[in-house]
Amino acid sequence: MSIRTTYLDFWHRVGDRFPDLAGAVSTRYYADNERRLFDEHFAPLGGLRMLKTDLWDEAKNTRILAWAAAHGVRAYGVDISEPTIRQAQAAFTATPLRAARADVRDLPFRDASFDAIYSMGTIEHFDETERAVAEMARVLKPGGRAIIGVPNRHDPFFRPLFVAALHTVGLYGYGFEKSYSRRSLRRMLERAGLTVVDETAILFIPGYLRMLDLACHTWCRPLSRLTGALVQPFIVLDRHVPAVRRHGYLLATIVTKPIAPAP
Image (tube, rainbow, N blue to C red; front, side):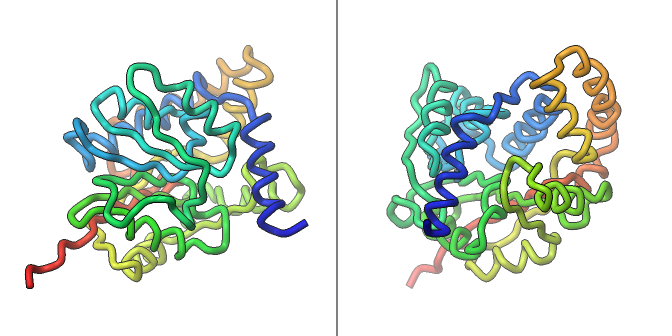
């Protein structure tokens, strides 16, 4: 079996079997962080033609693209997992999700198709990350904006080490995952011809607490009251001490595609 087939089969199983994480306190915190990003960097949302580079959140997590669609975004998305696409589409009610089974490394769209692109926690799961970034740059309109997020290598709670240990023993449900420094992410985006306009992060919380909260929410709801209470101080910090946001475990770099000068 080829590496690509194994990769596709893995994400098909994840889409088919992974539990829904909506409703956990840490998931609501995640969704609030994403909505803040959209309000700060994509507003006004009405009429934007937006692409999301995977549909995991719409199927299993924050439903951020469905929220954006309810605020006027024309929502497009790709995913390599058919079960994930089906579940994602169910999150959309008044407005449709235009979804395609496709890989972010080979997007099925023409050049300059989108006003905005949101890619959070997608491109770190495979080796050809620069190819994926180049594809996003290709389909983004000149003057358009993208928010591109990856795991923070310098997370103060050492999440990358924790994830690597879990992955080594087969206990990390999201497969292979890389992490990046803010500088290495910026350089990669600039090599693709994009201009960095802001750098921040989301989810200032220990990764192990997020995982524990999700596990309790999924398999032991009574204990989720305890984990939810442990999450609350980080929500308060995020709300009242904005400086901590830069140290979240998912970097979020905001870029624009330059407009070519008139000849």
